[in-house]
Image (cartoon, rainbow, N blue to C red; front, side):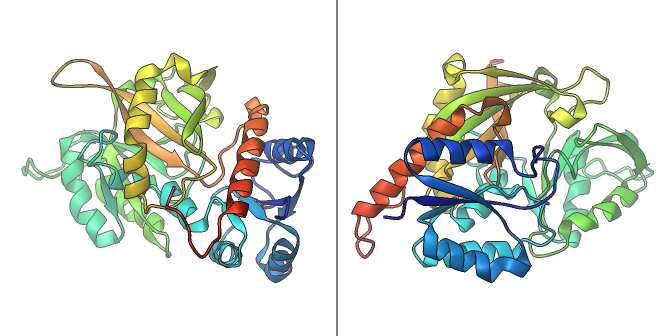
Length: 357
C-alpha cells in the first residue's frame, strides 16, 4: 500500500492563503505527516495533465480533490484525469463521478421524493424548458434560481414579481412583468422585465454542465442557513450562517456580510436524526457512489403547514471543495478517515468487491 496522498488544487481564486494554496489543504497534509504518512499539494493545469497523472500513479495511493468550481475555466480535462486515476487503482477522494453527482445543483431536485426537499423543485437543462416553466413556478411565489457550478453565491438569484404585466393568466407570470432580482454573491439588486432576466440566464444553460435549479424561496433564511459538515457518514461540525441584517439580504456567504457561528452536531438533534434517516436515500438517489470524504449539506428552516412545527429543508449539497479554514483541527479527523479508507482498500481483493458504501 502506498502511503502517499496527493492533494490537488487549482491556482488562483479567493480560497487561497498567503502562499497560494488553501490553508486547510496544508492542514490535511500536516495531519497525515503526523501519522507517518506523506502528502503533497499539486496545482493542476491542462498543460501539465500528463505529467501530473504519471506522478500520482507512480507515487500515490490516493488523491484528495480541493479544486473549487470556477477556479478552472474548463473542468473537462481535470475530471478526465481523475477518472483515469481511479481506473488505474488510485483511491479517489472523492470519486470524480461522486463529485459531480453530489456537487451539482440538481442533486436537490433528485432528492425531492425524500423527507429533505419539497416537491416544487425543478431542474432545467435547456433554454426552452426554462422559459416555458419558470413563468409558471414564479406565479406560485418568490423563487430562487441556482446555476450549476458556481461558488460563493455567484449565479444564485432570488426572483420576485414587483409589477405584474398585462397578462391576466393567473397560472403564469407575463414576460413583460417587472421583477426584482437579488444575487446571493453580494445581495445586490437588479430590476428588469422578466423577459430580460430569462434571456440573461441563458449563460447558465450553456456548455456540458449547463443547468438551472428552480426552488421556492424560504423566508426563514433570515434566521440563518445551517451547514452540516460531513466526514463521509458522520456529522462533525455545524456552521450557522445568518445573512446580513439588511432589507434585501438573503445570502449566507461571508463575502456578503453573513455572520457565522459554530456548534457541535449534538446541539441540533432533530437535524441530525433527519440526516441519518435519509443517508441511504441520499446515496441511492445520487448514483450509489461511495459517499464523498468531505461534503456538506445546507439546510434552511421552514414551517410545516399542517403541524405548525419547524422543519428543515435541504437547499444545497457541496462536495467539490469544502473548506474548513476556521476549524483546522478537523484535519485530524480527515487524515484518520483517509488512512482508515486506504487500509480497508488494501486488504480487500478488488476482483471480488464487497458492496457500495
